[in-house]
Image (cartoon, rainbow, N blue to C red):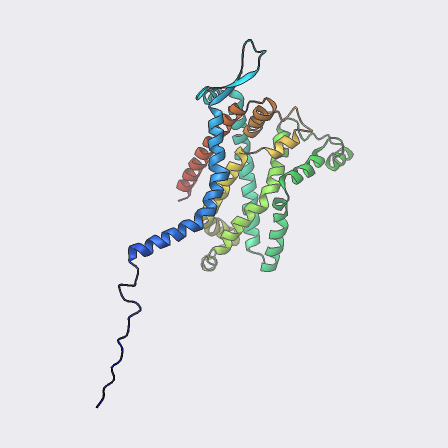
Length: 317
């Protein structure tokens, strides 16, 4: 009687062939690093290297040899440019002016964006898509194009708004005193309402509808639901949009620079910190001092954004 022997089965998942947890973790870490390489390269090229170059430039200064008639030479001065920036009244005045202007303009812009988002939250879905697209158009238009459009509307020679005011017997000056800030604020608010409204509206859409139904069962009106239910639950996006707007105002450059073409008396070369830096770098040719100003502006912007985020979150928590 013959017996057949079966070959032993080889376990495919034997411990000898299974990679160790440490080795598997290393392989996963390597793959994660490979996925982040494109971002790291872009971050290094577009952020780290320019900041390092600006810091290196800020440590030097151009000085003329002799009695000022000889050629200029670049000498190492250490942190003298930063010390000069800290005592530059024109630079700090432009920053204070921008912060005071932004505190009012950002409040108005976010208030209108919040109101529009609350109104759209109670509209039918088709109407919401239409109004969202319509209100987002000003944000899609490039800043240069929109500024040129408002430049024409503000122009003292060909503005249709001024023509209507003259026919009504009213004399309007868009760039006289306080009107300068109102005209610039109107332009920036028109540009930013749509984008902020989209963010706030998306946060409202993410809220559970059961909260509204429970409030209605308790007899709350729509305005009460908006004030006591909707707004307290979207404070996070309000803080985020406020912080982004604050950073944008400290970097304000294109709009006032172009409006200066028709209002050079009202909008001077140091109207904003960025205009002050631009004037020092490309008109005065003092790139080293402008580099120091840009780094100081970046540090101040980061500190103010951090403080704004912490203070607003503490008040709203």
